[in-house]
Image (tube, rainbow, N blue to C red):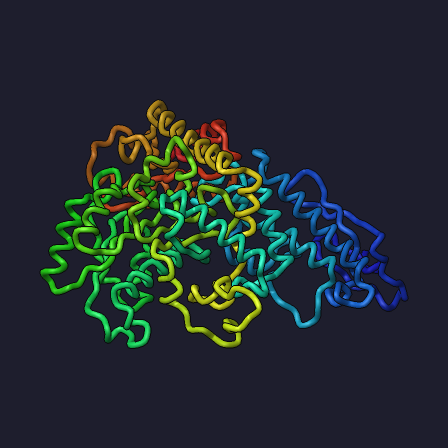
Length: 547
């Protein structure tokens, strides 16, 4: 109602009070409806038309406005959380970039000079969730991280409320100790003894992998820290052709060059072939390169393959090379008594990347780099800034862990993980992992039973990755060859396009090597059931049947 400073029901944006009518906008106690187009129910929001952010705490007398604002924000979040697991709801309400940039139903990305009202801020919060992707939906199969863990969410809320920084004990005492406890727990699960191991929480697996190369280079050539690249020979890194792109990116960032990352051949299931690693090392030495680091993968991004760690460790030992295991995706299997044997030999690695925000379902971000040689991480990175890391503090300054990091400010990623471990226990994480892999086995079995689906490789999946093609009826009689491949390459993108527009389910696709575009389904959401797997296959068939 324009005359009362209310909301425009068509746009969802606030209208100002009309000064000509000399009418004061209604106070907080007056409520009105906002219709949420993506849901059958309505969201009840208070009228905040006369309040802006400066009316919130720490403003004098701002307690009442703050409480009511946060209560309404919580209602929006709770409504979204409750809807997130409803199978009748959409995974996404897709709009093209230009549509969102132009504004939709009162949702505008543009920034203003004058402050918006608190009521408008709440509307923007609601719409941001509405037009985003619901990664907690049981039918979101698009990325390795999915699901919505409520204990982890509570931990994230508390972390943001505390707004602490993870560089010194004096400003983050409880979180620093939690990090120590969790790192020791994870090191023990990897298989390292109590008197070895170090680590730090990082902003994602790419940064964790970068740390492993940084520390490995320092271990062999400590003078690089002060003298730079001129202190180094031309170093060579080895990784499988199915490994994560972050290995090459890290080499580029660290000044060693992506061309000096040598890709080792894999077998048909995506595992590094040890004899190929051995021959690659010898060939690199003959070319004048100096091998120093091998990256093995526990759970490759596309196939979910596990490299043969013991064989790789033997080769690294024979050539005195640093062995790293990128277990960003596969590390969660260490929590499962049923599946941890797939990582046999990981304890022989000198460093390990492990992302709890993937298979373990911790809210993004939560990644760890574990270093077997204690003290090396500190030696590699410390610079001893005197305004942070004074040596004469009134406590044990070894708990000022910030100098182990290449960052200064560091987000608290540990608390949500610690809280989830408290709530689930190691057994709970193990059961969660088992459930995800059971879903993968179910999909694998269904693909072999249903007409029109073809597995990318015949082996039973080691992880929760399942890769397959959908073959439309018009292509089922075509013989293998370039013509069939050309047509099949277009099928997955066209189905994905239709899938995004309808928003009913989401799954990724990609080519790999000589294999044309295929679907990759990954399971990391404990809310996903077998009925969701059936729905996925039914939906792919429905959307692709006429191609």
